[in-house]
Length: 137
Image (cartoon, rainbow, N blue to C red):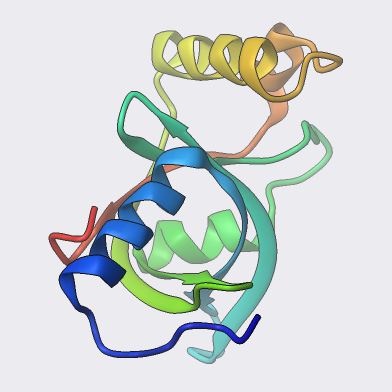
């Protein structure tokens, strides 16, 4: 099946909303904090109560470059790929509140990554919420 890259129509917008409601594998582009050049990487997102949340495996030895980039410039593009392709610009908010981080970690462990430890995620996982610029979200 060929990827869909047509302009937004009602059917396409509905398909994008359904995909965003499931979570899955995407690419994101951030802006390099030192170079100003686009930085693209593959990552998993979660749809948690209608929110787009991106997290990663815990790592306490250093903060991920993409998080540092978003702290400098919160503009982000989510790239849907596969049978439905779309580039969705938005704004990222790094999640730092321990209570919010715990709720997200608990959700991820119970719905997506059952072998992960929620407390370890709270302490060391990158977590952001993305608000899309377009009404597609």
